[in-house]
Image 1 (cartoon, rainbow, N blue to C red):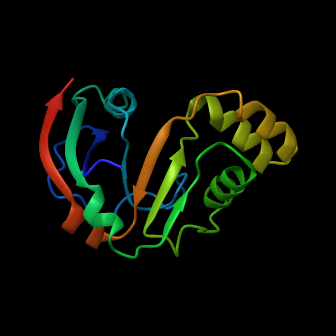
Image 2 (image 1 turned 90 degrees about the vertical axis):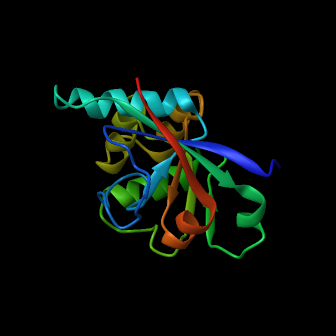
Image 3 (image 1 turned 180 degrees about the vertical axis):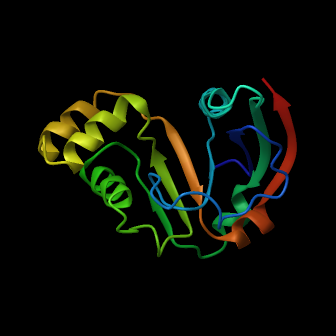
Length: 166
């Protein structure tokens, strides 16, 4: 694994000192600071957020993450390598307000974006079974996100490089 990794956060402002205790708790992986290793995904987040208010600009924040140092420590990590039953249940519980993310410092996996949310909501509301939901989800390409829930991880390993208007 590489020593340093580039991570991105899409939004509407420069975030040179990220905080984990802001944001909504009913997101896919709960309350925390969300980043991705996929710049295109960050750009989509930024455009979506900026389109909600015409005067806001779309911004991608770029960070260096010290992977080697991070992995040398003991943090509670939850990683979903694919869309599966475990991912679906975790996201569904988050959206139901059950807070399955409370014991984790770092949660990584797929995004329940617009094309997925219909499926997740149908499952949460009981209109389709978990098997039907998984069948729909596994056909999609995994879209990457990381929710950092421990401020120490940000303070020690995530270094702000720059922000760019897109």
